[in-house]
Image (tube, rainbow, N blue to C red; front, side, top):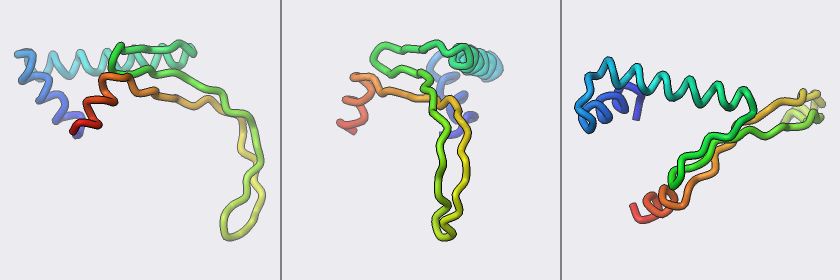
Length: 92
């Protein structure tokens, strides 16, 4: 599902205009992003939890060439699936 399809689906379910729905989705995603940049956790009970995890610097080998490269430290985004979503997807 692409963003435009998501906007249409939510607009149909809520009765909001597509413009208002798009603005709401954009604001929600921006707020989640700001929270993750601030290293906060965002939880939706039953759906899942967004969080961040630090990754240490390391060295890695490039497959095929065996060239060694340095990979700098970074912060990764993690998502842990909630129980209700997990069960819903498993049932199909």
